[in-house]
Picture 1: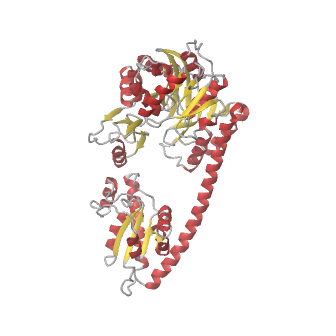
Picture 2: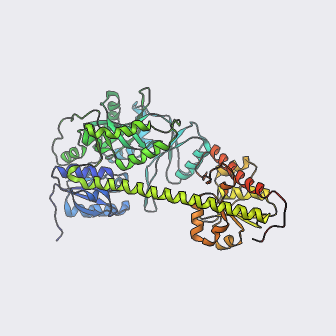
Picture 3: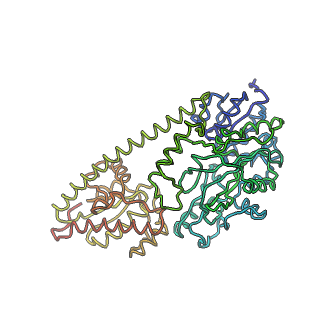
Length: 578
């Protein structure tokens, strides 16, 4: 007979998520029996001592529906907590008529659909006077008009989409010019319609709410300090702030209009002059949940009380300001912030010294780290190990990279000496980059103009042949007098490598891939950038870069080819057999 659990037990889904860990720790510490489910066996939530049982969760939404139905019939959970938008997709399939909808503390299905659709959220907010950025909808399958605002933000109308039973998460992206906008729309529109918005600078502010059948029970307000990526995203460091009446009222008007039930975070951007604009509604528990709990508003406990028909009690007072930090992510933020251009107004950078000193805040009791509990030390220990091992791997990669650069420089010196001694170009030159749609084909067509008596061609490592060059690359090449309209990519093969007398790669990854696949080719290979004094050894891939930056990179490629030409400028014997 299947084992039956206490009727007061809780199931937490998506055990890899930070919110799931916080729910398990919050409820487990209060004696609630918590089961946690995750798709992968190494989910961080499985490390918590408060997780009574670890359960494997199906990956696809349709399988998750059947699995949840069967599990609930056996175990009778009083509360099921979906902590990612991926698992909410399953509940959308379940529908609000199913008792699982009530057990998961979800709002009316129509309200959830509005919250999950950025365009519907924008329309609702605009209709009830909540400030929103200028916006327009670009429908899936429709040829997009030209951009109106630059920079602008392209937001997938649905953040999570399912294609061929595979769930994918699509993130908003900031675009600075028309070429970058066209590339990103080409990537997003096959999956979903896109909301194009005027870019709003400033800091992210979240109003987190607990509702019971259309009535706000608790709220909490926080401000993001560090966001990863630096252009805007999830917070790795944040602080509690006073519940400013105007912004809390705006969040309340939205959720009241939706007759909300359960939890939600309403996200705003606050500009330097104090104005705020709605960004989106997050209709589930959020990644920075640790801050609310540690500051004094325990949303998972409030959910449990409502699910078990207990009064949640009055609005809790919370500590202001109080800070929490997600250590693994914030270490990455510190590295990105250190390397970033602090003059770029689209990057949310901060003074490095100030950010470092803030790591002392735990000593004065005003900061804690996500998931850190002395009673559940395993998770924090795993995080510290993760950060240590990640930085160790990065250090090893850096050492390997420096050794590889030295090797390539010595290789270039030998190759240059051989070419000068021979006095003429090899009969066959092969240019290589990863995809053979940007750098190497441009090098090929330009080199053909410089070396008309030499067979020049290009190839890449991408598994698919026949791909054309992206539109912005074709346009940039045309500005420089080169035609790539008819180019189609081809994958490198042994015959190409054997016939080439000189192989020129664009970056270290190209060189390593070539060395793995064709070790004998290393002796006749160099980086194109090494033929220009003072130019970087590696030539950046312009696939996702702006038109201006793409032209700069193509000019670097031309300089590299010119460097070879200058090396071989003197007349000599006929070309070497290659």
